[in-house]
Length: 114
Length: 146
Image (cartoon, rainbow over all chains, first blue to last red; front, top):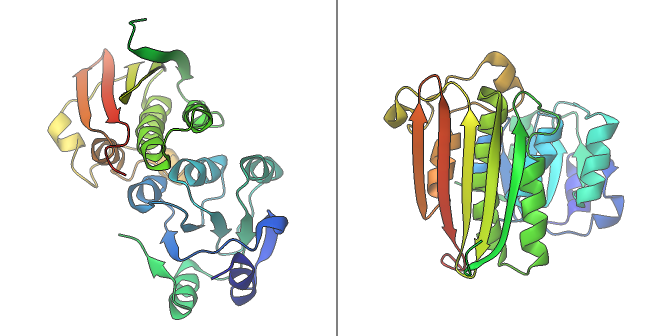
């Protein structure tokens, strides 16, 4: 599923990486615990989290995630967004809660990692 | 530096500085990527480095991270001046944590750090003394998990 399709089905606002929305994602990792992301992400997952500090982007970078979607309408500050841009990681935000995001993406054929 | 070492870097880690926590691991990732190391080996090495770096930031006053690259492996040594770990076996159990609420709000301290480090290392050794500090030694073989 392309990232611009993810944006549409989750009704996201794009905060970083507008030019990279043709990226294809097949797997999702979702948690507010960064070590859980690091434990389960393998490569190029879409990361869903409610944690909006700079560690969320550092974790996505270290884990090799393709993009980050912030849930519950939580917005990172501008420093975090700039850091994501520097790392080339697209950042999206949706008002949907994590459970609903995962349900929608699973319904579209995306898979979790474990 | 021995003949087998291609690169050696030593970094200072500042305890309690959450804004900068993870910068060292991110820099190591960039270095390994620039050298053309395989992505999976990079991921394993930097997950170990990142978890260790976060532990120093969360628990210790300060520490150092030494990164050594050879033809065959990445070696990481992380030494801190922190509280030490009273029960190492317990600390390795998934879910066990001594983290504060503040640490958990930052997304860490869910009891996965040490298990993650062990999972991504080919060899992991920890020396710790309560009241003195903890040293972590990890070896990550290159190309062993492609």
